[in-house]
Image (cartoon, rainbow, N blue to C red; front, side):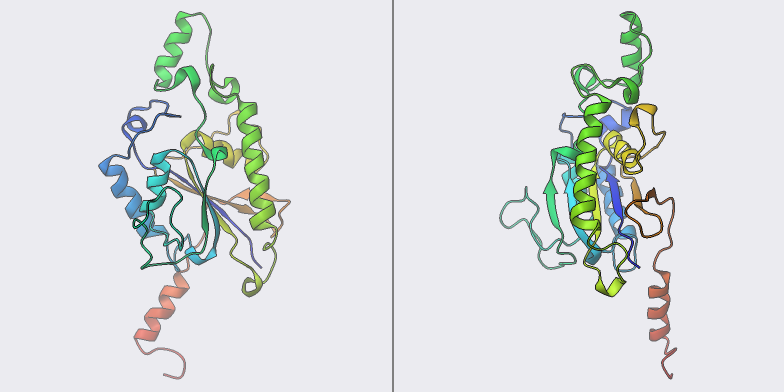
Amino acid sequence: MTTPRVFIIRHGETEWSLNGRHTGTTELPLTANGEKRIRATGNALVGDDRLIVPRNLAHIYVSPRRRAQRTLELLNLGCKDPMPWQKEGEHDIANVRTNAKVQVTEDIREWDYGDYEGLTSKTIQAQREERGEGSWDIWRDGCPGGESPQQITARLDRLIADIRTRWHAPAIGLPPHDAPPHDVLLVAHGHILRAFAARWINKNIAENPSLLLDAGGVGTLSYEHHSIEEPAILLGGGFMVDVIENARGERNGEGKGQ
């Protein structure tokens, strides 16, 4: 039976992700190494015999920040329609692999760091000590001039409800040949995707979800027992190696009466 998934992908490396500076609203390009690694991720994980099967994608959500949008472009999913930010003539229609639409949404933009934008955690802690404010934990305290954990939770819960209602509920539990495209892809940022994963399984983010997602990292969320009432984090899964082995066997003249 069909069990839909959500793939979460953090944008590729930037100069600020390299040195640990909090990057919310600031627009920064991917580094050359960041672009290279995202291309490699697409080659490794996207395809009919890979983790992310383009034809199974129902919808793609992406942050308004350019670093996330560039990451989506470099994954080479083969979207039928142009990305919302692309100009005429920029869209490659030669290799269409999915009919999934791309939606730019504020609900998956990075945590608004407010007064802490551009600062490292070490600098933030030092400044707070100078002011006599004590320790700081973004999951518990949020950011002055930015967003609180409660505000983050509200927008992520809204997005999760949208995913489950529009894309997962119509497909979950159906035989694979009867199910419409049902997987969802999110391309966004470190803190917000970790918070998303926590809220996916109904955890209070103020308690610190203790999850990590490196720049360019990929995670998978799904359900237990083919039940939309049992959301889960998928720690690992098997790739479609049988497809590869069958193809090799056919080329070698094996099977089907040969």
